[in-house]
Length: 135
Image (cartoon, rainbow, N blue to C red; front, side, top):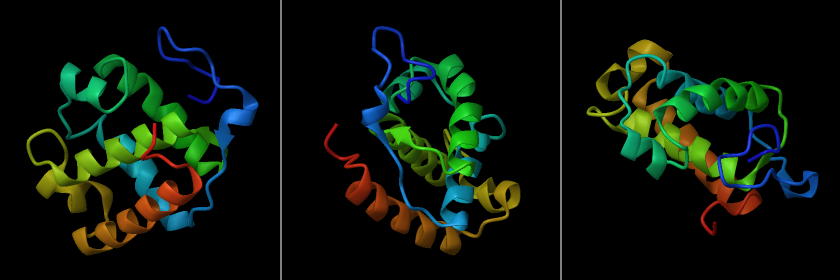
């Protein structure tokens, strides 16, 4: 977490725990759109929200705007926040059951090909900069 809104039972991140990740404007747009999709065509369950690192669906919806705004502003986030933003974007893009799936291009304006290219770049950068695989 980034210290602004800790999950229940978790302490706020210290400023030294925040990670700035060098993403392009297009990569930031992808992550922000991925978060926004959870408020649109996507259908999250409590179990899926928890699996993605949120306290539940209400927490996903509450955190999505804050996280998207931070990403757009190029603000640092905690490793935990980077990880759950990435997971939420991966799921909402790929899943036709829970996420936007086939509606992704229509609702985001991003083609599947463009999204995959951007997503792979973001995955590499977050693994390198924020070490999101080792949480």
